[in-house]
Length: 277
Image (tube, rainbow, N blue to C red; front, side, top):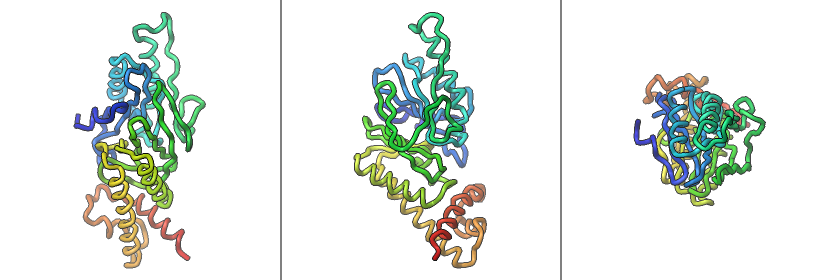
């Protein structure tokens, strides 16, 4: 396990899933959030349907004398959400079997909340402006589309920590499945928000935490503007499709990443076409 496993803040701890790849970096960061001394915690992004990882997180929480009260998803991509329902079942069973649980207690349900109803377990979803309080810990919900249409960011005010999912990564840049306009608006909003609340760290969905939120967001914003200018130049030079643009703009990038880059470039082409007179 890398130094990413176990990183975090006073209330947030990362449990790194063993699914490293070019798209997931070191693996998916599963975040366990809890007030010091509280018996109940929130888990953000249980990760892929990897039984060893899911069990490790549940057993780790149980060993601390705690239980999972709620699961939240930053978005529905499988590397973040595929294990959520299985994890919720394991967590509920562990709580029922824990010392001190009432005799004969059967495993109940641990809710899974997400913006997209397809990824929920239970009736409650998540939306802009929601405030989630579980085990005394508060998380504020922001809709930040761009990487995906259902992307959410959570703010942990007690630690002044911003949990960004795949909207901002610990290193590198994210692939865009949604619209570039939406993504740039999300970055601008996160930058202003982080400045307003004096955020001290970004806890991403992949990669190490970022202890200079404003610097990280400025880098992301500037990178997107530079890439957009490069795409414009490629189009002016005759490139017409996303594949043709990638061949020009991403010539120095490993070709195994070109198919993913096409998604982002297509978002940029759509953005440029929308703004044509």
